Image 1 (cartoon, one colour):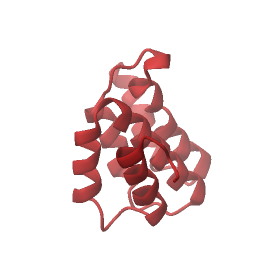
Image 2 (image 1 turned 180 degrees about the vertical axis):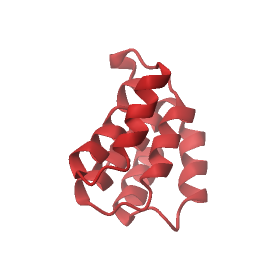
Image 3 (image 1 turned 90 degrees about the vertical axis):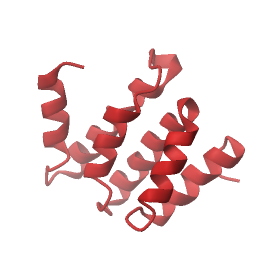
Length: 109
């Protein structure tokens, strides 16, 4: 990604609009989706995730879970370490869905 694009995505994380904050996370999904040409980009994905860790808007929380689950397909160890390190700041839904993904390969049991 070009620098201007990253600046825009990071700006979206600070938006009062829940949909822009969600979009910042959703923009990381192609980086980690084989079907979309991604090969796993934990640095950029986790940078955006960290910016929205404390956001409790339901749409943002769901997108955070999605972004981490997509990265977990490519780099499960990195995601497991992130979940462990940021456990106190993550929403319960994110921890549950991502841990299920890491353990079973599915979002829910």
